[in-house]
Length: 493
Image (cartoon, rainbow, N blue to C red; front, top):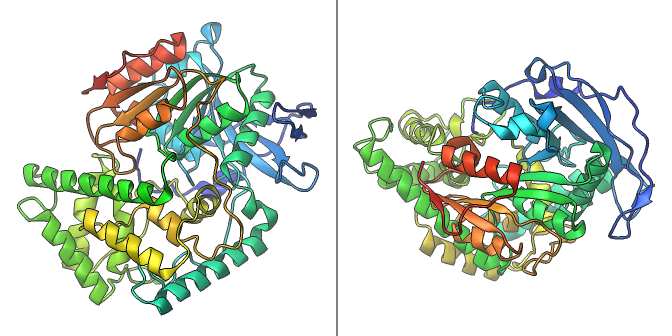
């Protein structure tokens, strides 16, 4: 659902205020934690994009193990089911790491997807978009330092460059801690899953329905493990596999992203909608990277530093996640940067509901840290260069390693791989070619959720419910009846 920035995010946040009190919750949850979250306070949304919907906030503990020591605010928007007589519950919409679910809902509303194309998802379910802790309209993580200032590289070629990276990361984290306090150490998967249990209780639902994308596929699994029986259905779109070693995961993702780049280049060869049509796309891209590494390319924005080849590589993966409109935008960005000395299009993620700081801080908590030395990082860098000659391994999971070197808050990765009992059989949606996640990651997640089925989608897109009628039909059938497609089914439209 990539679109250009809406531009009103700060103003919209001011509309999410409390109006109607709901009784506080006060009981121990299934994991033994004392639940002292306040109820959801709802009011009619003042924002024009959410006309007829309800905006809400609720207070939850910053640290669920110390529930009386500090609160944060969760923000949400609820779109009531169109067919109230046949309503089947609440469906929680969850974006990927660092992304605002509320803003994703807004983009879908503006595009006419809800209710136009959504079918029973909009007719029979209250759609509830919740911004997780630390993100978007909920109490956000805000840091003053740049995640990657000029002179810092994630691909250090010397001990001195490695030491500078570690020192910067430590200073960045300390600044985040100063500005956000203990929240910086509590935006992990487990804390976020506990928030969603509080949301379930606040909604008054016996069970929730879950739609999670990318990172939120792992969040859904974590919630299901912590709170067995509390999910009725679970749709997991673009599943991740966190069962293997962190280093093998990076290499696998880099390989997948490189394949996606090659498919993008092949599309350029065959389509006159590509700004690089008739050119050797790989050679054009490599020349741009080399040019920017020699002399960083200006952005045209006074406050933004010129971009190096590394910066451009790190911005490329997310352009590969949707064939339209992102692939044409990537081709145009490469052509413009190479020929016109203008690299503006590589200064932001094409999905502008993401905040890179709010991606990084949870990543440093949720991912193990397998690299401790310059020598270890050098070995990984060489492995990535071998499998990813164009992108150089500049993928999200690599950044999750390099940006967290020197991070002073310990990692809190969730143990993965064991079967999750008490979870519903999930519908896992996985494209056959995706820059963010290999196709086999769907099977790895399905193995943890007994009875689950992977519905393949032939293509390169994530958010498959948005792009495929076949996927929409199967998803709505599952949400309303619990019926899963036959194992091995692959949608081709």
